[in-house]
Figure (cartoon, rainbow, N blue to C red):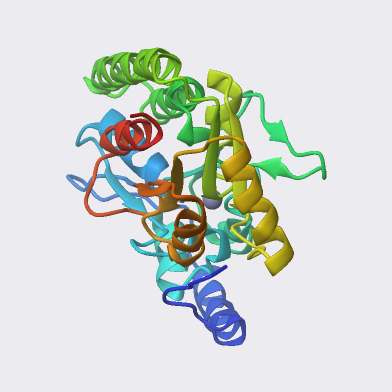
Length: 295
Ligand SMILES: [Zn+2]
């Protein structure tokens, strides 16, 4: 990983977590008092936005991964332990994106839901599961349906809640279906068949829209290229006439800049939605990524 922002040492975190977990073990299942909204926590920012939009004010929704963080290296803080402990519902991505949550969910009295349940994951040739399912609008529809079903179960029978969640879900799914149609149309129209990305975050976009992704770093945002790998990437970009290098908002563009300089390609910013980026909404970032790939 080229640049890590706000890295907390593992030793300090573990010490803090132990103290917080001990404190947490004395409590029972969290029950919001009268008039207080239940707390729902999510891991990634994409899940936060989907959940917040679907819950539509029925709950307080909170994202564990803070803005500007390299999410694959995330270490939960004592504050996260407290939020998970008091949460009524915890919504996680799974697929290896938020394994760190396992350290702290023992303290929660709430229900833990997997937003990617039943969806078909990508497994790399090395046997690793690709977590970036929300990056593809087509796959994200399944995530929205899972979050909707989790909320419907959570608000079971509550007056008005079922129609609110159902209507909000229909609206968001319809919006993302429209974005998915734009992906199919514009990637075809612009003849995009190969994309070069900072890290392996576009695997589901590649699978769902029939293009090829060549990542500089792997699915965990690890593996800065050696001089030999960089030379191979330069040859690849030139040989395949790749015009755009996609560089992530929260990621140093140094390698992408070098690649662009050596090949005449242009660097464009894309968003991973793992953490909040520049106050942009999830759907805006999906469209931003499409714009970066096309034209
Ligand atoms: Zn990633």
